[in-house]
Image 1 (tube, helix red, strand yellow):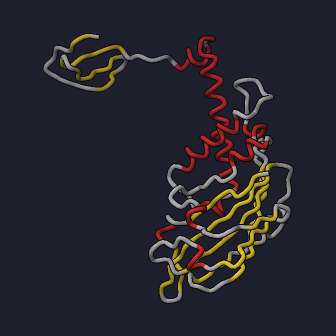
Image 2 (cartoon, helix red, strand yellow):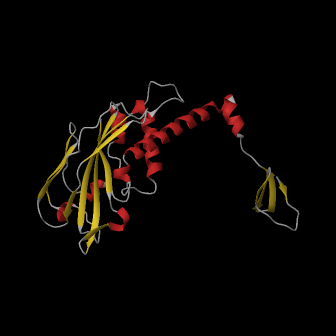
Image 3 (tube, one colour):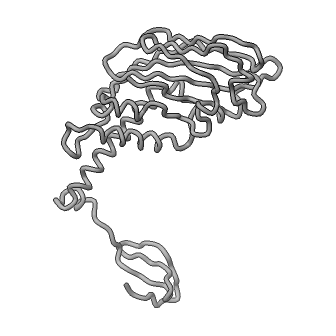
Length: 249
């Protein structure tokens, strides 16, 4: 480290020199850090390479899941959902106890009961957690993906955001192969209800049982709307919409 003696006081990096202001004035030092080539080839960085490889695969698994449910997630997500889902996928990857270190993957971890439990209950919009939005018991038939809300009263069984006049409920039944990316998402018809004190039984039945031999995921979405002159508009661009993975098998 050396002091910079010049009429021009600069801060930042130029070639291999870093200029900055410290307690003793303007200082300059050579750029530090490990080169990418060394990280890629030096045996001392084997653990770093392994961690990086596994992290990349976990992030890719999160991307595969997000793309598989785009019709549901498009208006029911927060700005940090990618990072939050990658964190969960990393935890699931860690449950792969058969692959060598550096090669552990989500597609193995998710086959374990602990891996499935880790993904179960994930909310794609942390501003609208389903358990705080939907105040009702939910029945799930894992054979068909059908979700039932018995004696559902919208005005009482929902935490209704200001301005909402209607609510839509949708279920999704997904089969996803995390290794190949093959997916089949089956959605139920949308059940749209006015937010009043009418009692009804909501039955959300996906169009079919999804094909495939991958992981099965069951989703429930609650979306709010405001009716103006007979037209329903998404409330605050979906900021209050909830989407949760109800079960994973």
